Structure formats: C-alpha cells, structure tokens
Image (cartoon, rainbow, N blue to C red; front, side, top):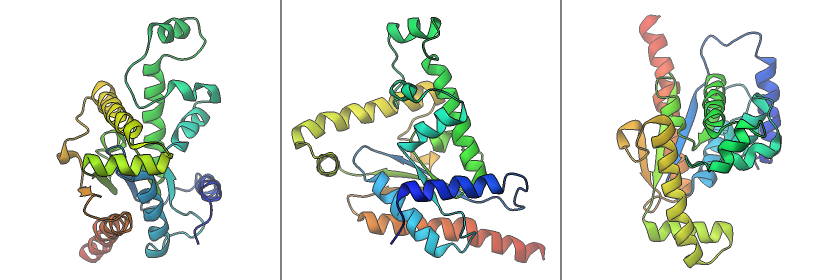
Length: 242
C-alpha cells in the first residue's frame, strides 16, 4: 500500500535537498495534469504516482509526489510568505478593490505577484522532476521544458457533477453550480495570467475522457505514456549515440 501523501511529500523534499549539490546528468521526468472540474484529477494523479513508483525503477529514495492543493503551501514556503496568504491564491484571475488596497498597504502581496510566485515554484518542481503538477496552468508554464508529459482530463458534465458531489459530500444541485463556477475560474486564470486557452487540446500530449475510461484505466494510460515517451525514449537515444 502506498504511504500517506504527507510521508511521500516529506521523502520527496528530503531526497531533492540531498541531490541539490550534484544535479543528475539526465533530469527526472515530470507530468502536468490539466482538468475539467470533477474529472477525477486528484485521484488519478495519486494512482499515477503509485503506478510510476512500481513501473519506473528510478531512485527509490525519491518517490513520485503529487502537487495539487499542497502546491499553495509549497509556493508560500518557497517565497517565505505567511500561510494566511493561501486564501488569496485561488485558481482565478479576479481580485477585488479591497485586495488592491491591502496590497498597497503591505497587508499582503498583489494577486499578480502571487501568481508569479506560483509560476516560479512550478518551474522549480518540474526541473527537480518526479512530480505530478495538477492545475494552475502548469502545462503552459512548463511548455518548453524537456522530459514533460502534459495531460488534460475531461468528462461529460453530468458525470463530473456526480464525481464532484460524491467527492465533496454535497448535493448534485450544489455540485452543478460549483463545477460551472470552478471551470470558469480556472479558464480565466490561465487566460489572464498565462495568455492561453486551457481547453486547447494542442497544449497537451494526451486528452483523456474519464467518462469513458475509469480512473484506474486513465492512470495506467498516463503511466504507460510517460514510460514509453520519456523513459524508453532515453534508451533509444542512448542506442543511437552509443
């Protein structure tokens, strides 16, 4: 059984700090997952990490880590910011007049500054590798990085409502409104801060419909794609240049 996400997260950070002095000759791969709300991204990301720990015989001391909600904590840690700023870091481009005034008074950084911090942390994690980055336009932020696999998860609206309602233990009626609002917020975030369309399939290596593939099947597809595209690709390159 895979250890708790907290244990894996600590082992990941510990392993990366030990490797900071000597960078590997071949950087570790990484995955970004963009998603429609309720498409199962968090569950699938953890299944992928579990599968890659088995399939990819890399450094056992550095397991695959998933960064989704805990990405905000990592951003605040990287930039030595108060944990209380988490509430000012939703995946949305909106910020109120109060937000602007408080930023000017030094209560907290302006939202745009926080989004820039987010991009820096995403890039650092991608460079270190063995990470699955969920949301926040990570595919756009790392578009030119090597050894990346970019995935977009979609599903029919009624299935996403069901998934969201079950995951959050709320009614389907409430879930429907939140799914719409969250999708629109994420769309605004990527458009406003990254100048991209989150729904553009050309930004991704894979677009998977989780309404037609189970979470387990989707995780296996992603795991296989990374192993075949990135890891087996290294072996082919070594054969060519040997």
